[in-house]
Length: 176
Image 1 (cartoon, rainbow, N blue to C red):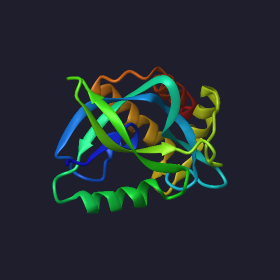
Image 2 (spheres, rainbow, N blue to C red):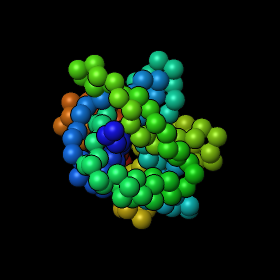
Image 3 (cartoon, rainbow, N blue to C red):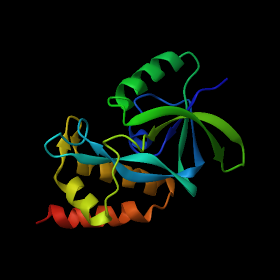
């Protein structure tokens, strides 16, 4: 049975492994949201950044990339993803059902925000932009994360109006 991983944020542009196959896919009842404080990769405890997470919302849907792991690489890829994605307990790993453009449904590993975790937040777009414009973490500026994700979404033809707004606003804040 093939191992699939769902990319909706940094896994879109930096999966950390070479996928054997990539497919646009939809996850129902979740949306992509800058609802996780980043105190390691894209911010610090003193000045947290924000990263994307899958946030449960009935009736929502998140379009992203299903990434198939090459046969024989499953254990190594899962170990790498767990080290990267589960750095804090803000995300939990789950198996979700995705649907591709052809209507095929298949299971995939996904990293989902724990809504009870202290890193789970909901800020308006302006506050998100202010935080993203300033924060820097172990993997670099939070702006790089936003811009890389937005660029990949655009290349894939995935529209996300909140991310588009954030890109414009963060660029405005960066020139001041």
